[in-house]
Length: 219
Image 1 (cartoon, rainbow, N blue to C red):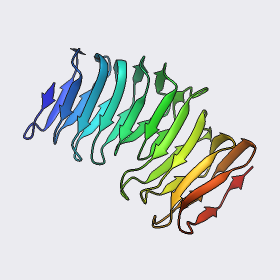
Image 2: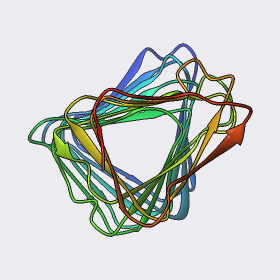
Image 3: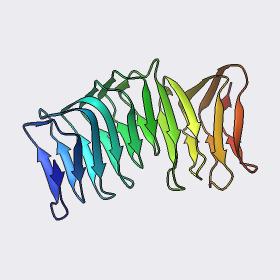
């Protein structure tokens, strides 16, 4: 499915079933309305969003397959329900927001994100690994949550991307974690919430003398 330049918006008020591997939204907004259903089904699913695109779900989105999202700074906002039955959920140059009282269900164990993650609704991340990485200096991450984010967080920011953990948000790095940060990032590593190392040694590596700032709690 392709939404091309010149199409201002695409709104689904009914049912969309997409069995292909690619879906491109260029300079457009996609809205999955309340009571609407969008189903993406393939071994691999690639969603490409233009930098000006928005992707907002207020209904039901069901994904079966490895879902990769590519953009140049777009945000996916869930104001409904997303059920991802695949694995290897990958957000490239894309932020993800799960709004308050909304639900995401994910059957896989691996999530990779280059930009920001706001988790305000229901999203059970137990047993899952969330890797925040980067490919350019524009890939800055802010994690926002209330209480524990859940899962295990891996930080690999070796291409100038910032990592900021917001106040009130607790992230676990697991046992013997390795965190990679880059000296040239504007805010190499800033913790305003809680960072937990469950056991062992926390190795912080990177180029040069990268800076870490703790305004919260590290335990």
